Image (cartoon, rainbow, N blue to C red; front, side):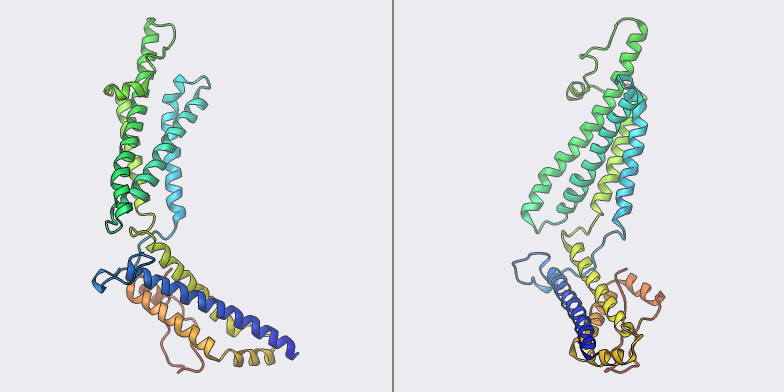
Length: 317
């Protein structure tokens, strides 16, 4: 029986120790990031250059991807009918062409313009990344505009070719007629309302995708990741601490001895670290304070300390 108690005790202590050091390392890395603005091998910057705000990022990245997928699907469905006129597969072939154009348009705007370009442009203290963004963002923007302009001209050429065939002047479409890239490079204007609407639709979806890319994570590269790691590690430590009083409750003798063994410095230090992280984020993020006030009480008090202490804040949700 004593051997079984010792084994269970060591397992619990090992879990708590692992969670404690993980939370401590992630929180120290987060504080170091704020002091150095992400420069790994540099000392802390002057205090007036520290990051003095919480990282901003969406609650769920799944919603971002869902919106992108929806835009690709909608744009593809809208363009499928127009592109089907030039495909031997009919509507299916037109949809494949349209979905390829829509996917390229949205992904390029999201990743190259928004996620990389616009975010890197907001980090002038990183000269190499900033220079790459200055060069790459206009190129990516020009590609997106050219892609949508070419697609609109392609829609125009299909309409003009269909009208020409209806008049009987041509027996079949020729390569000279259906050459939207050459027409775009020659500066041919959009001639139909449908082509203009197609161009506007593509540019609008590209702008939305670029905005989603720019707000996919914090504008300071790596800051959102550092904060999420610290919050997740603190949540893991909180979960381990919450499980301690309920471990092996069915065996009263075991529970008493385990609790006595966990009343040492490791448990007290873990609770103190959890409180330190919670209070830091609660003071740094008003949203965390509001969530904390609405949340139910949790028992993270140290039995060695005064039992009348306030509930520590629980941020980061």
